[in-house]
Length: 170
Length: 195
Image (cartoon, rainbow over all chains, first blue to last red; front, side, top):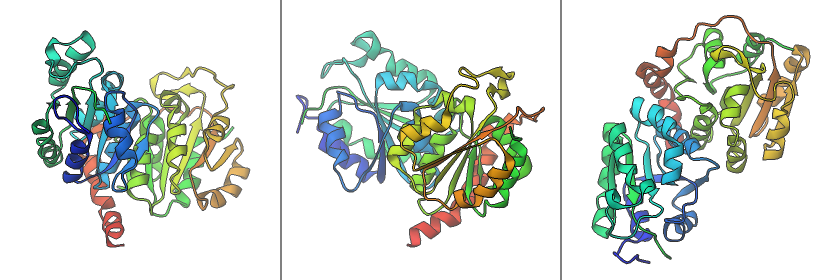
């Protein structure tokens, strides 16, 4: 199903599969819950690792990377904030392709992250300060950039943050 | 009470070609006892060895993954017990050296020193098998059987704080250790992909 700007969880699932992702480590985020996490939890082509805390997911994705398995870590931006030390060390300083899908709780569809509430507008500046490549997915055209961005993350061994800027409804 | 180096020597005798993931004091002690490119040490900080090991266990389900954790490290990533138990990797063996202190950071006591029941927490989290040892004779006797169990397995080793260790952090966090490990597990990946 699509959101009001045409963004769909199905398109995101198709995009990560196109990029060769086989594993998803995740905590629920209401922004992506119904449209993305529930559908992929029932997808036989994706193995879901349910997390208690987001920094575990950084490490699990790193372990899978060494095994040549592609993974994404799904979380809310609050989990991103809580995981920054793990991301700093394991993704950025070690130079490893930890690919994150981050739901931006509190951002309205079409609203620029920089113009949203405090807990949203600080996300991109933090990513920039950490040197993490990022894209914000608002439309299906944005999602179409995701497979290439994941490929580049693995080719260059750099982390990636794909932001989901609106609630995905089923 | 046991000595960590003596416990690790027993584990090393039975290791075969298992991947060993370790952090901080355990990592440096283990490196001195059982150097191998199959030792994974680049686990960042804050108790993330066990979670790296879970990723490796999922990615290489036919290889044994041994975690050499510390009590302070486990306290910083305590919820991993539930995540690991939920994922239930059969190839996962989790040792925790309980010395009651943050040894790598000045040997300050951990919260709950002497009172926290790590084995009890692992049991209630849902590990398949849980053990606790404070004497070498019993540990040495039971270790071969433990190494053969299907996981996830959790073992508390009650140990004395060790003496001075050489904390070689440039090695731990350096690219060479990770590159060596990648090369070392390449045959395991090839074997997995061939089946």
